[in-house]
Image (cartoon, rainbow, N blue to C red; front, side, top):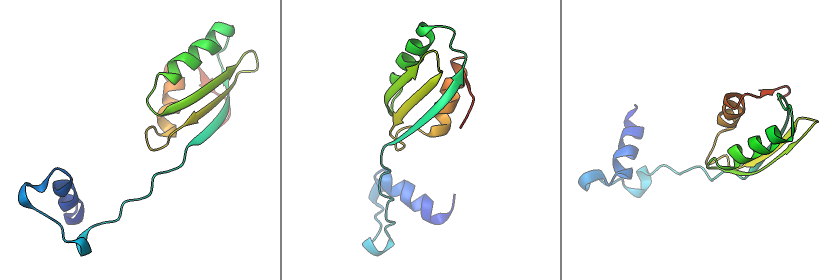
Length: 103
């Protein structure tokens, strides 16, 4: 950890008396806007697969909406990139037993 990040981490935890001068403060990045992705996935053998994928993904923090289409295998996901990374969503789809055909 470099010195700057160390002091930022200490300041974020209350600093125990340590304070950064305003000129030393690091500006935070503005939050990212909501995003969406649409994929074709393989592994849907019935409507229950699509509904199950929707249900399990919607339960994840940061996922705002999911629409899975059977039998086309299209999945549309709206998410908050400040709360969940796209790579995490890809991993979840894979863990649930489906394979993303296009990305």
